[in-house]
Image (cartoon, rainbow, N blue to C red; front, side, top):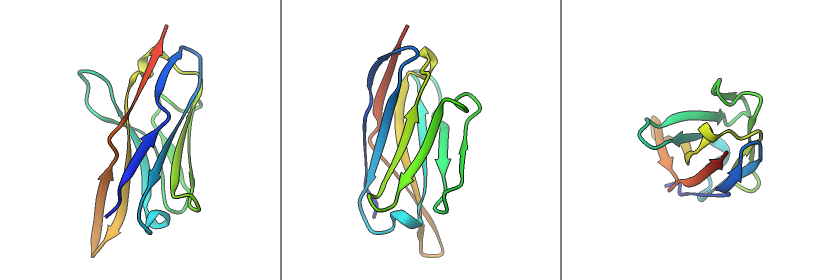
Length: 119
């Protein structure tokens, strides 16, 4: 079973930067596809950015050019570098891991880290 622990959230002014980290337990991190989601108050959880086990990335249109996802398999950690933050980026950010399990896959979620962007 994979456990995820996020860190790095906080309060930042618009235009500022934050780096979120998600540390994974277990030995299957390198074979897991990882992603960051966020959920703003009153809104549905949405995909922010994802990175496959092979290192391919994609990001939501709303964050392209501002946010970068990366991973360090040696540290079993995935990062989300957030630059040019906007007030609309305010949300709780969740780390997700999708890892091979039997003939399928399993999802694990972190507890979330809050990001607040002030104007």
